[in-house]
Image 1 (cartoon, rainbow, N blue to C red):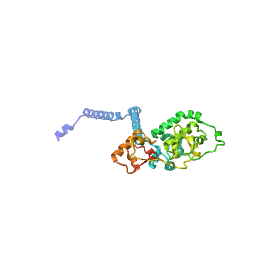
Image 2: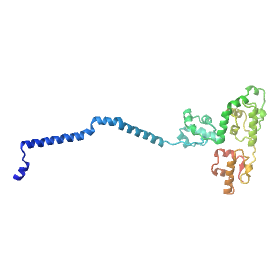
Image 3: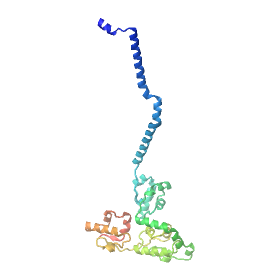
Image 4: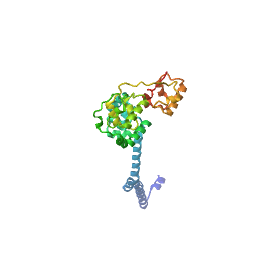
Length: 301
């Protein structure tokens, strides 16, 4: 016991020293643990690094939300399906109007036509119309219409007085004479001859919408023509056998250009013989929007 007692026995000055040492250690511990979490340092972090970091997180969230949105690629509005229409924001009534119009073998050739048929709002039209993709021949025709609109108006506009006292020889657009056509306000000698020339090229109008394909003819004027003249008798078109027709003869088809003619002949070589004219749709790059018009002049035998 004397051995242990001698080691734990301290005088007063020694006890005071030990107490002072314990107090200093406690103070140092408080300083070490409290200082990193002081309010002054917290303010510095919130005002600088933390706010900047939060902005970066917000920007990344916005980018991720945009990436998750369904992307819209260029498309032909004539072939909008129910699913596609819903994705674009169209109502069921608007989609049904489009499908009913297409069942009549007519085509939409401009964003104005699209709104006129579907009755979509201006806001929706402005949102989706930049993605409309029409065939090249339609785009060229629309551009030509815009460039020549004022010129055609001044050269071909006639007053309604010219119709007074004139009796039409027929109301069949496939039999109408140039004089009959000139009775329509907005149709002058130039357009009347142009319509007849295009009618001859087609061997007669099979669809009313073909009138809108006459170069330079404004849709509003075409509407006036179709309000008076109808397709009463369908034209008798001499069809060519796609399996035996020669290259130059096939090029005479008003809706087939040189490149498409090559594709048809290459496909014919691959399959040896087309069993049905609908096989043309199997050709890669075949313009489906022209199919109804192209097959007016072809048959597979």
